[in-house]
Length: 119
Figure 1 (tube, helix red, strand yellow):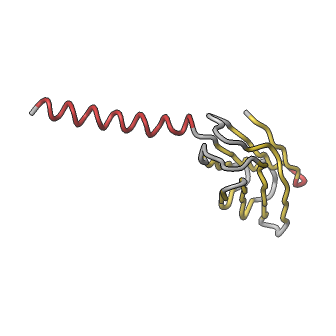
Figure 2 (tube, one colour; figure 1 turned 120 degrees about the vertical axis):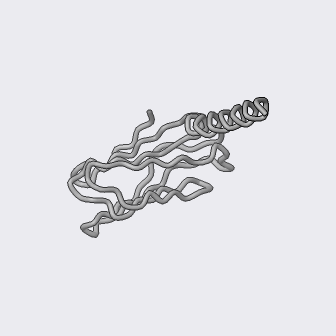
Figure 3 (cartoon, rainbow, N blue to C red; figure 1 turned 180 degrees about the vertical axis):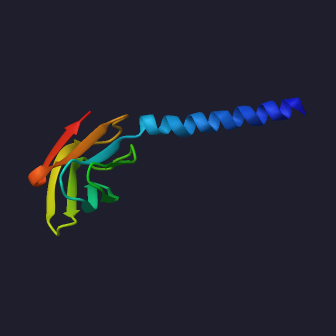
């Protein structure tokens, strides 16, 4: 019986380690709202997928992970709609296949300026 408990505990521990390590391996995009206006809707399009960040309050951020497998190379195309009805679209960065642990931060600054950087 003790062997069964040890086996189940070991498997459960292994699954938890694999789950959390996937967040380290998978690439991610973060949107940081450093502006004085709330974000009503933020979306980022990759060549083969679409990421919906939802609303982001003033001074807050949201991060999403995406698949390592990207069938086509391309750019991050963003659309940001603010609570005051202003909408910004643009692109930044570069997406390619198998970019392990890539971190991209899109910062929305005052006067609707966008800064995009890789960390």
